[in-house]
Each structure stands twice: as C-alpha cells, then as structure tokens.
Image (cartoon, rainbow, N blue to C red; front, side, top):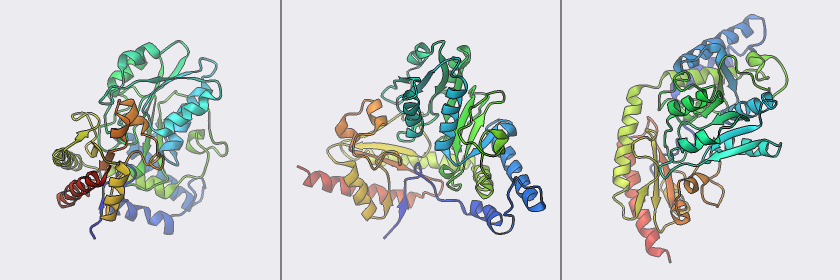
Length: 378
C-alpha cells in the first residue's frame, strides 16, 4: 500500500540534514549550556550561533530571540506576559476570532482573571476586518494578536497594514507565525511586530522547540520561574539539540521549495475542484503555498479521512489541536461556512517532499471515496 503524508500543517517529518546536525548534541557535545566547563561552553556557542541565524532570517537581533518548548508556550508567554506586565496600564486585548487554540484558550484563561478580550471578525476568505480592528482599540488596550497565516484554511493576513494600525495607536502587536515561517517572508521590523511566535516542527525541524521574538525594550512577566536562562525571560535548561535542529531547518528552506509547493498546491486544487459539489475554503490568491482546504458537499469529512487513511493517505479535517472534537471548526464557523460544509471539509497540506505521483494517487482516491460515500449516504 502506498503511503502519502499530507498533514504537514499538523507536523512535518524531520529533515535528514536536521537529524545529522542534532546527533552530536545527544552523543558527544551534550553539555549543559549554562555550565562554565568546556562541554557547557561548546553547547553555549552552538546555541548562540543558532540564535543569531534564526534572528537573521526574520530581521531581528539575536538578543530578541527567546527559545521555548514550542509554539503554544511562546503564545502563552507573549500574551500572558504582556497582560500581567501591563495590567496597571490596561486590561484589554484584541484578537481575531479564528486564532489557533493556543491563542484563543490563553485569552479565555485571561478573561477568567478579569481581562477583557475583543474577538475581531473575519470575512468569507478569512481576512481580518481592519475597520473593526481599528475601532476595537481603546486606551485600555495593551496588545493586539493576529496570526500571520491560518493553520486550517491557509489565508495570509496583511501584517504590514495591521502593524501600522497598532503603531498608530501605540499598542503592542503579536503574531502567531507558526504556519508562515519558511513559506512566507517574515520581517518583524517591516510588520512592526512587538512579539512573534515560531515553531520548528512545522518546517522539518524537531518537535519540542519554539521561538518567541520579543522586540528590544518590550518587557514581559515571566511565566516560568527558575534560573536566568533566555535573558531571564524563560527559565529552564536549554534544549540544545532542538535549538540546533531549529536553526538547521530554517537554514535549508529555499525559494525553490516554496515555488514547487505552490505549483503542487495549485494542481491539487484544480483537480479536486473538478469533483462535483466541492469548494475551496479561504483565499485563492493569498494563501499558504502548501495549504488546500476543500469542502465536499453531502459527505462527512471524517468518513473521507478514515477512508483515505485505509489507503495510506494522511490528511486532516481541521487543526490537529481540535480534530478529536465533533463540533464544527471555529475557523470554518468564522468564515461563515454552513455546518454541513464544515463537517465535509478536508485539509490537505503538502511539504517540499510531496511528489506529483503522490498527488495523482490522492486525487484518484478522493474522487473514488467521495463518489462511494455519496452513493451510500441517506
């Protein structure tokens, strides 16, 4: 049976080059980067070299890079860190209504602590309503958090424009850039970002390592107490091998990889939309190079997913963080999709390793499965 992995928005396979670069830091160069002996300083040098490389990729300073355990922790540190640090100034935060659960649930936790959250609407393609965003900002607003690219439907926001709005209103601006890193150019200065979240395992790096960009001068209330690691912003022994892997993963991404993924994405969209009763979710023009979210009418997405799994094809019905739930995706609700279309949505996400031969197998399999499921459905 063929095996085709098209759930790369959930996680990616670790690139062989990344694994090779990480190996020595498990077996030979295993010192604690906080120690003063040679083993420790060897690890420290590798961490700082990696920090500088990652910073350069997003047009940041190396001291503005804070390593975390992943995107969720980075989002928590950014949002809670600002909220508690600036609570004397104000208790209001603005987010979009279709953020990742790592942002939305962080905000809901803050609501229980007395903070006020405004959830800004998005249109049918998934673009934030900029007028509502402007009008939502008050003299009590301390942070705006809008994701760069949506993990379910792939729509890419105009962060430069949102950044201008935040700058004009003297409000800190955070963006969850976990899905966009390596697929869309991220320039923290151009976007006027105060904070930005990144994760290695979405770009063929290892799981368990993330980054929070914190603009110089922005102060956060620590969320983990302990040692003085990460410029006294995030306590805990550094994940040296993970940091090395993150740096290597971001370093080997090329514009050609993105171009090929975009070409493959367009081919998959074109072929899937030939199936009767299908529609593309999100923006056709401004979407991630590897994201294809399609609604199949009159069929359950879970049935498609399980049938594809039987054929060795991995896809998703929504975000990996919510796919075990039975209710409609909050993202698809936000863009106004009918419940029946939400339940019939499948997310296909490609990687630089995806081949046309694999896509042809997927296209043929989806067509056959949808036809059979519609035939037997009541």
